Length: 204
Ligand SMILES: O=P(O)(O)OP(=O)(O)OP(=O)(O)OC[C@H]1O[C@@H](n2cnc3c(O)ncnc32)[C@H](O)[C@@H]1O
Ligand SMILES: [Mg+2]
Image (tube, rainbow, N blue to C red):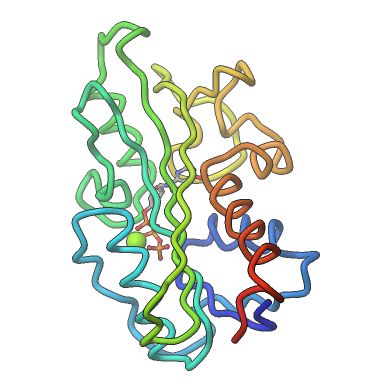
């Protein structure tokens, strides 16, 4: 089990969720923003490629094991878009308001049954920059796109992502509930199970 790892993300919402999810397992999580290096160019054409690329970049710049998360929302009516481009869907990286407004606009008038969508979270764990066996975990959270924003919790597309099994938007969920059922929670649970199952966990 690594003692310290660098979280290869600059997304404040993700960092908050990872800190909550990894709090009591004795791992010190250092967001990459605490180090002084430029973030990786996300040139991959899939969540997996981007997650591996971000993890390897963070390992190379810190010498620490790295955990990266590449995630996004896949909307069936848009043939899977915005997908890996979720962070910059409306053109400006991280402008959640613009991203959500554009998604609502593109689905204007689309009936409920055709508004299905899912969040993907791919985690890549790397022991070092030349790790030949990065561990990859993939969580998927099914839902649909609302016609207007609901709720104040979470981040990104949460206010317009309806979670059928909860009967509300992801942004209306208490943090601890989202952290039990989300795409990120599912992927992280797979990682923690793999740590436990590997003899003595993944070593530094
Ligand atoms: O690459 P890093 O530094 O981790 O930060 P980022 O925000 O660029 O992250 P991604 O490239 O993985 O893009 C993910 C986008 O998908 C959205 N997203 C991911 N997880 C989400 C969640 O749990 N709830 C709502 N939106 C989410 C969010 O808008 C992010 O901007
Ligand atoms: Mg990104």
